[in-house]
Image (tube, rainbow, N blue to C red):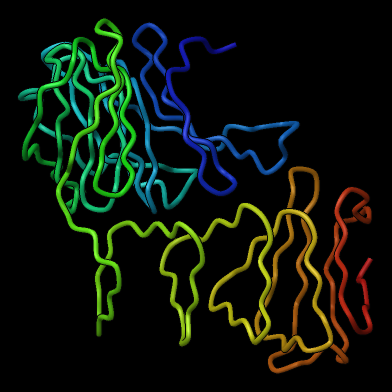
Length: 284
């Protein structure tokens, strides 16, 4: 049983855990698609004493609490089975970092030893760079960023502090183009044209699509997916859990009235279901 699990962050089907156990310093990746049986699928060694982890897109950000040799590390987790360190900050200014939060191109780190909130530019993952800091109360333990504000709690001084990170509030905005590091929508979002997602998309509840949906790569589904009468199939859809996996192969341009070929395990799945409108021909 591994002790000294310091921090966890969950994105999609994976949980990222900062582990420190007497010289064994790692970022471990767990597959949590089956909540009853989380399983380690990969790990990577960090510098000494990883304290906190945050994941944004394909990168995990880990702060290592090692006195004057403390660092912020950037780890590529695009392949969960083989995460790789791609960048490590200089230790200048970091003494006992305790928490990290990433928004867009910046990482915000509470520096407990120095009583500061330190800001790193992580737009170049190979070389995270400290660009500024602000004085906090004594022993800042945790940081959270929302919009233009950072919120820091200080353990010894027992205070909550709010830091203005800059930016502006605009009641209405119409723009021809925009590059956004992190996008948070408080209420509703409507997309009139197309939307392209280069990384991952996590949906906490339900997704209702009234028109056509095109998936250029692979769609991984945990649970149940139903193809209705208006579905047009192109490519393949993969359903998987920890005990079985099967692939539904769809003919290019086929509609729900076409025949679907299913490749299933030796034993038919009993815990997951696949509902497909149309005829189904299992291979087992």
